[in-house]
Image (cartoon, rainbow, N blue to C red; front, side, top):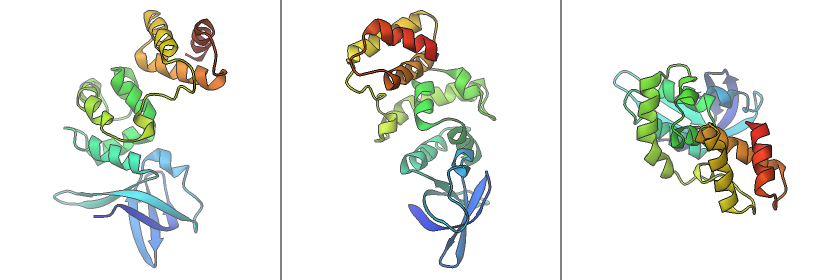
Length: 198
């Protein structure tokens, strides 16, 4: 019904914000991570929205990007995940972190989110693995690798996983290393730096 709403910040809390759109106040529930990125009261912002209709309620949910909104819509389609829990997931993990947790089967990262137990985490991993691939966002693509050889990154990933680190942790450490090193770094240096970033 609403793809986005552009308006002036009238009120903002970690749970919701109210946008003044030509004298009409729209209340949008938001992820906690969005609150700190909102402009000051009186400033204009555009939020991508999802309109959720339940038997006894109708609510608008606002997001800083269309990708977050699309992720929210995917999450609430999973059994046992309602809008409140979906917002909590997005508020605690970035899109990339969620993709890493799901692809790496990292239950621990998901269970740290309030409201998610082991069974819900396992369900998320199973049901989201293929769905995440359908989102056409660079955030969901393979991590940026600059000009470093893909094979070198794969070898570094394997080395860290053989040392006992999960795929999600290894991937994050390697990405930090690639970001901090030059493009032509050798494999040994990449692994050494990645170990420091774990």
